[in-house]
Length: 116
Length: 301
Length: 175
Image (tube, rainbow over all chains, first blue to last red; front, side, top):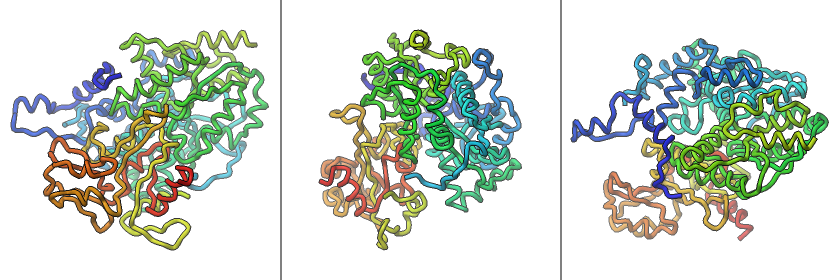
């Protein structure tokens, strides 16, 4: 397989990362040609999963369809993880904020977006 | 060489907290159910590690900042400590994250202080009283292969390929052997191929999706197709995530359909222990339905 | 015998060669192809540490599939040679070996001619497209190297040079 082959789902993941970035550097450079692009702490490709991690506490959501599948397999509809225990998620967010992780990554939790 | 202290815990006295991780509850409910069926069947004091969060993925977080990785991972360790359980991971990524975090904090008091300073802000504390075990370790060391063999009532007459995953090879060279022996106890025939050791490509996906999908999983699934294998057995949920992703990409973007079902090893154990596929929803929620496999198992009875 | 995490991390101080009383600063990263799974984590960790990207093309060490053996991977990483060919060949004297034994390229002196790449037996120095200078492994500036830290199957190890020589000799069947 050649290296040039595009993988749509990977491109989608990258797009999702760019979408959750407030300052799209590619767009900014068009407006301000002298501005130099830089690499943010969180690479674009990882931003979508990092955002989910900050909002859910885990990388995947458990939506209605998953709940249905879980019930079919004979499990509780919701797993006993941070999906249910919201206080665990709150603690995680507090740690993320107090330890300066969110700040350095440039994640603004009110907007749900990365600054850069 | 295996680093760290080995605890001689006995299955009867140890309370295990099963760490689900991100992938298993969302994409592998059948594996979750099968794991619990198997552990209860073997008489383990097995429950969920409640309030669990992402492990956090060492491949991403450790690269970004090892201190952040230590801080975030230790929240799960502190949870386990509070619940007084030994963390059991079947996902290799989660295992390595928890194991290495615990090990590093034991070796480096300065890091432990830093972690506790951060945890304190959320009203938590880590005293390093907990332990981390891989599910393979629990089965092989705490339960024992003899008890597993004794519990097998329905030997599986199928040919499988297996993939243990990179991280299970990191600190303990015995894990691949545990995996093979437990699988063999179910009666399956393991087919060796040159790609058994090869990584699933999950870790490479962010960096080089082409190699990750086509050169890693592509080679594995193609070999499985050529050898007419009945099932591909995994233990790691992270690897499963990548197998599922690759199979979908092959199907949707390339029009190539693979037919070898990807199964969790606990499913094979559950089947060998006499449970029916319906007991853990084997036929639901998977990219490659195991219809042929189930049929073969029924005929083999 | 392997070197434990705690010992491996103290690169800034001389470390004890396992089994002896000898202390060395001269360390090398070695690769065991029998253990490598080709996960690429070493390259990703290296690329992030030096360039803040997960794109493995930015890495300063290279792991590729062995064209002759299915499912096996070969690696090329800087050994910070005792007598570095790159250092000897540099026309601008931009390459030097520092007090920790790390062979470095000074980006301020390098003119990007590529002689070092030609002189190195395994072609380790590569062109940094953005800065137009040659770059190579800097042993993470004497910290615990990211590639070793990230290796997911314990295929990369950090060992004192003497021990590494023995290790590689054993891997090759005593040759």
